Length: 470
Image (cartoon, rainbow, N blue to C red; front, side):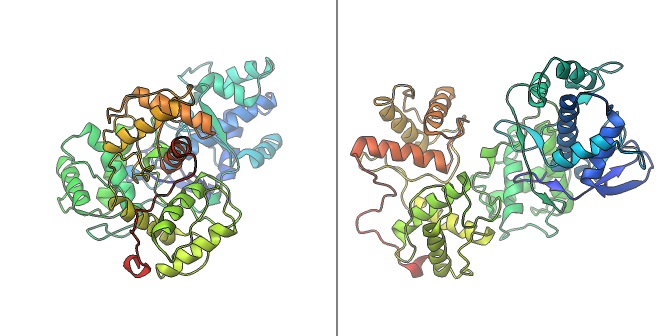
């Protein structure tokens, strides 16, 4: 399975038959594929709202097949079939209707996803007359459009109210997720973190696979142990390393346990890879990823004299660029002022080292730094206890944020309190605590308790010289 934000592939490979049928493959530009399928599946004379709703569903279905590597992870050499028992109707060489071509040119880089999830929705559909299904009815969209519903309302009618439409997704060359090199002890980077995340999820269904405590992209002893256990369970050579066969077997089992191709697919949640590099950050950008970057830099800047401290605004401004440049100089990276994967990883490692030197002591003196791991329902830790104490203190001033008992267990009540805080603070109310949410909670706690900003905290007399972190 691919990780990171989905993108629109330049090309898609279609198998002209059932998956195991001896039939040719064709590779075509993604927009042309969508135009062909739409022209083959529905009628160009339908109301425009119905056409648009169907196009969103068709694009999302195809992108889900690519993002989950549904066929690639099963050792097929294509992305999707043209067999309607499995996928969507594609007729090689068919005529494209003019109005459908125009609409697809506008909509091919938009897709549906469920709130709180990353992957494109597996937008199941059927014609609604000769075949019915638990998904969108193509003919049903016509009636809804004639009743005055807009495309988004039509999609909500079939897929639920907790969906959103991603607009103008980036177009990139599609590549297989397998990195092409053996992953073993000492390997680092996003491919390692990908298999760590997937193995941790698989271990819920296969408890014999040990958890990997730090899914941080470093292939450590815990990762090797998990890989060996996985290989033993699924009859693979027990090498403790990840080559192509193990990579795709992990992807296949991961997809299976999470039912990625089901309409009610769990999907990979945004909080499952909060620290992973998702794309270059550069001046003028404004998003929560920038805010997270600034939080890490603010902490590092408080401990490393040569790294310029920074304010957390969510905007990649001149101050952020100067701070990034100062960090890159300290760590011997190219001094660009922009954040690529190498810079992001080193910033996070520097932050994690500081957190490791200051375990939570539940001191009333200062707000504690973000632990570097996501806190969500089901987690038990001292940091959850600290979080609960902060929320309860905030509740005294802001009653709409519920108080919670400081049990150290992140249960439904804690999730509700976090979601309430996120709604109050203008953050995505998903009930999950990553760096941005933790910083906001700790910051408000600090303001209410001490009357001024006291974060990030620098221990008295505790200074890390530049050469110690280089």
